[in-house]
Length: 444
Ligand code: HOZ
Image 1 (cartoon, rainbow, N blue to C red):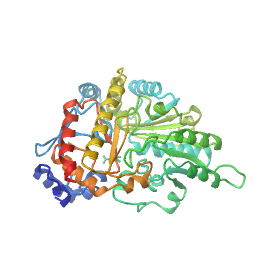
Image 2 (image 1 turned 120 degrees about the vertical axis):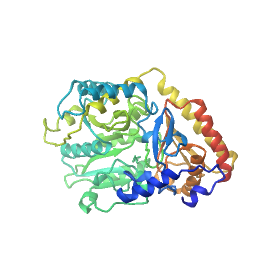
Image 3 (image 1 turned 135 degrees about the horizontal axis):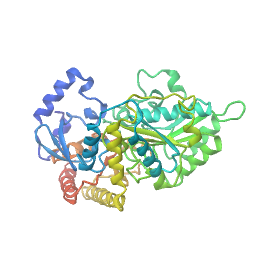
Image 4 (image 1 turned 30 degrees about the horizontal axis):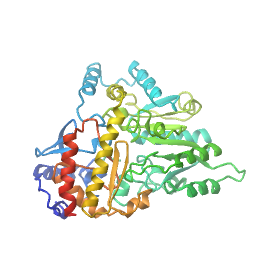
């Protein structure tokens, strides 16, 4: 284990089996993990290998239990192994795993998604958030005939080449400004601006016009509440400004709601903030914990997708019956009256109390929270964008993370990720979390 994992006075938890598995995993899997943030590079030490999850609790291979605030990076909004979702998967599985052909279930699911997200006239199912954002961009470029796209510094939209410029999440965690393997050509058409900076986005639109005066920008893609530089909400009026600028320039506004979709409201961040994008990307919760994602939006745009139009996109497992059944079961339950209000209440209480504990411990901190997403930054300044997030004390965050882990609380192992509260978190879980923080914070 790294020094970081031993540097608090929190009870030390033994994870010999996890360590053994990690050593073994590194022989067969690059870095021992199938997605980089999981390797704990952002906080040091060895990752925890899990064996099961139930409600808000995870159990590791050494028999330790944790209150989970990662929730599989978002999908587990109802908690782990939710019985209705499991039953829906089992029922679908008994009928066959994949047909590579249309099913009634996927039509019902598409109809449900359109009801929940009114800005979508049509929706196409894919298998991952990366596919959704990549396909939405291709569609925006195909429909406008323009090449350039704008993304925000530190925003993460999956790992398609053109979106890995100035990316958040694992790229931010590892401090990679770009990535090997992305050609200059793929990166050249990606323009980046700081999140929440009105002057910067206005300047980009001013500066990228063709000789005829038409905008060169096909799309602006954003996370309407950033989650991959830590949780960083939009400043008042910023989303409306993006809507106006894109509409004025014939540019497609894409909301990447892979994280925020069904997380902040049934209709996602766009419902919460009252801004209607042209295209929306969904992932995580939409698959109920199985690999499914979607992109949808204005009919005139969606009608450009093959086989109707010239923009090609396909997938053998798209609309997979199990993933669709899981997503449908989950979203059906999310329609329970008052559910999002309850989630928000729990999360606001947790975020407020965490901040109070930091203050009592004399530690400068900011806790950004929107609905059931939150991030604690150890900094004395507000965090409005990626530069602000990078100014936070990430070494202290690492010590906090390991202290909490030792007390049985599993937070995202990176400063540049959002934590998630689920409907399964009971007040006992929240109190256990706060008791852990009470113990750990004074040691930092
Ligand atoms: N990019 C994901 C979080 N924003 C992490 C994926 C994973 O490691 O599972």
